[in-house]
View: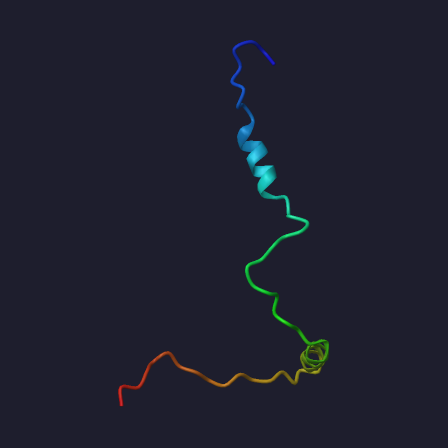
Length: 65
């Protein structure tokens, strides 16, 4: 290092690289949601055969009565 150089030089790059590292053993406050392989396979098959379930229409207005 050159004399008089700032020792924190390059800190922005180190912080950016550190932000991109994934924790290999993360700990979450909530449990992961359960999934179903059977439901997933059925959904993919519907997608591939163009028989996707159309969601019910919903609005954003609330009734006052």
